Image (cartoon, rainbow, N blue to C red; front, side, top):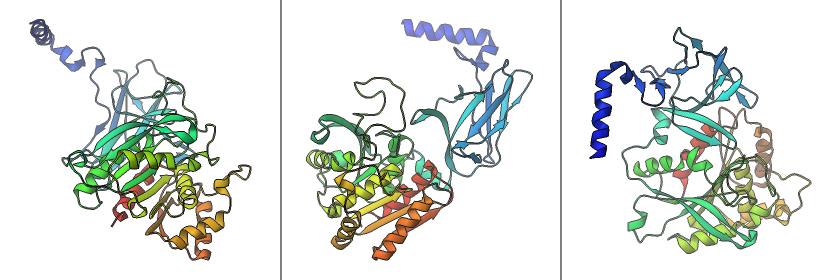
Length: 390
């Protein structure tokens, strides 16, 4: 009864004061931002009547080193700042607003995403490749956060696991892709920034990828889980943590495989396992697949770091050439490498390919435009997974 009375009073209030209908009840003007126009330009708006300078910075703009470029927004007489882009191609984009030099988010856009310690707004322009990143009307898999015991690290840790549509009602065993994040990332990175669940749902629905389980572990052995998701509580995320790329993660990776193969219906053999990752995760994939040379039939290196820091001493990185040769001799079905032409790791990947060529080690190479960016890694995932488990 109270709820009905409350709704009646709100309705009467809006009818009595039509101007209120133009505003969010508790949030000021009801401004639309971003507005994706029919021609695929995008208009952004923010109310900041007292600001002196407002800019927008988006990942579609030419970069200035690691930082995306920015553009001035224009203020109208009502104190609303506006900016409209050129035509944008279909893609998932991120951006920030900069008000008098302070980077912030768009208060009119509730869709936010975290990358390491930065938070961005996001929007999606439909069509082409970007349709894989949408939630379409297809059967959906399940995303779970699972805690597992890691004896090698003497702690419990968290991973994200995608199971394909129908897994819960099936008795079938499924192959597994172990999908690893980059430096500063965690078990949330691929599912959020990489749109893994959407990509897998759509590829499986289209018959382009086999139904598979995708395991996305936390690659930082100093973390139990993503920032804010462990007993450590809320703290500012950082890029480089203790034990980063020092061999500890690779040496204890079997803890992850053992948990998955004990708790999920999987094809627990080499033909049913793939491993891939971006940047640091590509480094991990390279060395894990070499350190356990008869474990994975499919390996994907997305913009990978290659060799460890010379100061790092670990048996994982010993006998590099010999163990790589052993991996080749044992055989595999796919060794896939992707890199952007402007990626700062391009030179090292080129040198690594020259090593593989000299050894006669077969691989598939994918060179794309752009640099060390999620746009490329989403594309690589969507091209790599259809090649698995066939």
